[in-house]
Amino acid sequence: AFGMTTFHHDQKREGDVPIYETAEALKTLIDEGKIRYIGLSNESTLGVCEWVKACEELGIADKLATIQNSYSLLDRRFDSELAEACDYYNIGLLPWSVLAGGLLSGKYNKNVKGNGLPSSPNSRFNLFPDYMKRWH
Image 1 (cartoon, helix red, strand yellow):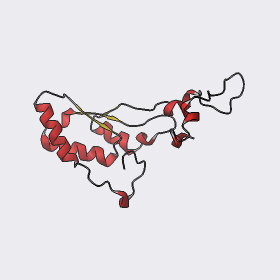
Image 2: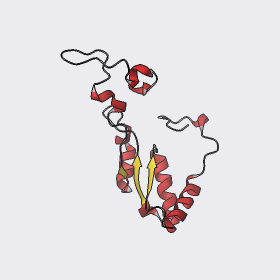
Image 3: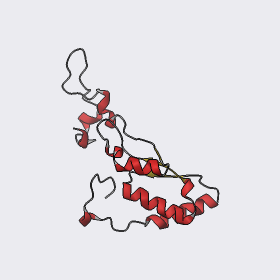
Image 4: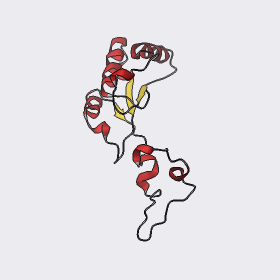
């Protein structure tokens, strides 16, 4: 499913549009002048390689420009082989959630020490216990 952090062979997504078919549609939009570049989001290393392969076959590999994946002090998954693949294929990272949904800012700290202020009871971490649950 979208946003999975690990691969489970028995949970392959049904009904997905194949990467090549999506790349063909994007090539049409590029050819029509409606878009200039392609960006990926929440993609795996295999996914990046499959995108590169499809774009090379379609002659638009130079249009595959960026990937937008979660990246912060708490989420360093990009630093492994995904970073290597993106560097090799000249795909730039546009990180999202660099403060882990605000958690790294310290404003949601329930155990404040010193001169800090406790998090507001109306903060999203307090109002929505499942918000960014992976960080707490």
